[in-house]
Image 1 (cartoon, rainbow, N blue to C red):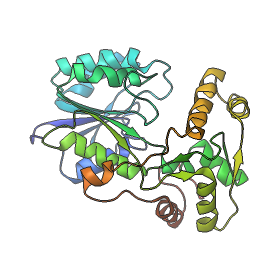
Image 2 (image 1 turned 180 degrees about the vertical axis):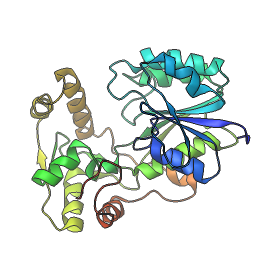
Image 3 (image 1 turned 45 degrees about the horizontal axis):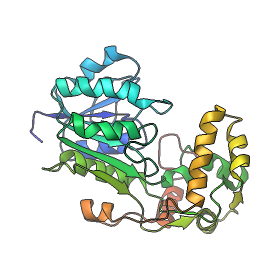
Image 4 (image 1 turned 90 degrees about the horizontal axis):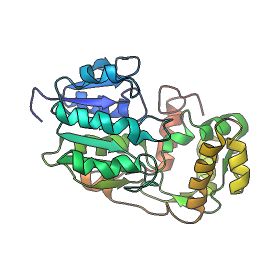
Length: 291
């Protein structure tokens, strides 16, 4: 990176965006912290950005040559709003883009998978992060964390399926490498923690570390879909329940060396993550409440 270039971090107040912003600024890289309210994040310059308001895009891209992309969270078709912005970003001088996707979504898959597929045709320098499920889901502001605090349960349709949960700090470390390395990865990066755990094992760790009973309540796909549909559109509930079913079938039972290979240190294990969250009096993001 040149001293005059800046990185636009979209979603700079979110779980990964805030961490990416903090790491970049700590290493002296200029950052434009983009969010809908232009909230300040550390020492980064704040800028208003809304995926659905193109009037905010030009100012956000000013003086930027790379961008960290967090898709709009509730978009059924994120490509419809992201691709026009990315074309505009390329025209404005952005040459490197790093996209946050998911281990469950390959290139060409649903939702952000369409953006993943298009990215290499838009930028010569690019990477797609495909992290596994976040450890923060159990200690932050996720539905699982709320259920743990309020009911001592984790409800899933994953059965005995296993997931190599990953800490958001490790995702951010990989993102910063992808944004600042002399050569962009030019590929997708599946980012996992060091060990695949079943939700029964997750509940056992939470019980041991916090000293309160936490159980894994096993639901069927239909039961989970109907439970989630009480608080969200039924179609989206079906998608989320389908991800759990895929876990039950072994889709996420894998561990990669991405964090170690790109950052030079091993990824954080789940027990240590929970211990640190408990020591801080709660979770790992700005919405967290005590475990």
